[in-house]
Length: 77
Image 1: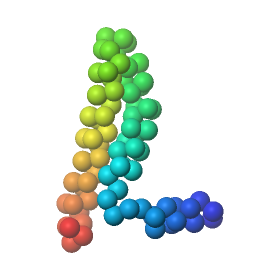
Image 2: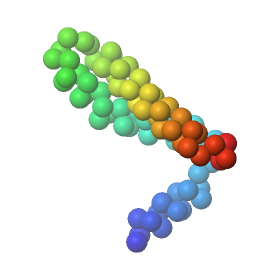
Image 3: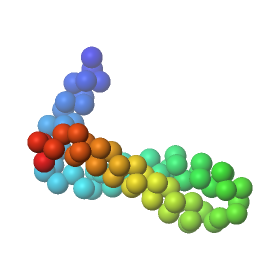
Image 4: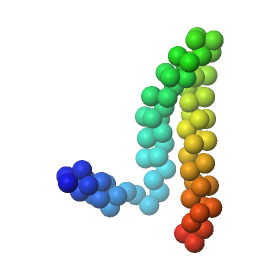
């Protein structure tokens, strides 16, 4: 119950241009993704490449979700 109220409050306080917030959350999510990419490569790539691959994967995932929404709900756009 309290979590839903916090989410509603957060949505009300979102700025009109949420790009900084989106970038912050994507970098925080990359803190989870990049070590997994680095571990899956068995040390064959350096850490910078793992971070870049992680960000590229997150960007691709976000773009696919956006395109999915645009295709199935075109009246919103």
